[in-house]
Length: 144
Image (cartoon, rainbow, N blue to C red):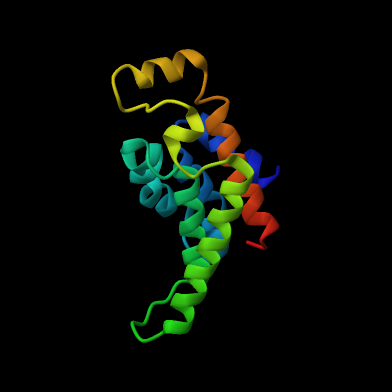
């Protein structure tokens, strides 16, 4: 099964968008799927504020696992991680018109009846799954 399908399957099992993206790459970069699911939990739904899409946040965590620095003086790794993050977010935005949850869904799920309306419109099964697949596929295209 393709990573994008595995991520969509995780989402259908009750994990959020960030968890679903991060978890399918985590083991490749030395993090267990279980730990990745825990780490990614708070990033879903644009950090519970309809801000940065959780699928994007999950992807940035993957990028950070590969390129992030673990020594304060390692400015080369830090700069490379920042550049790779910018590359990903710009390409995701070009493909999907935004990296903001409420813009991608067309509704702020954390205001008023937004969550209910999004559910009634099936946005979690359509738009969210599309963003998860988009993030995973873009990561793969970029060599992750």
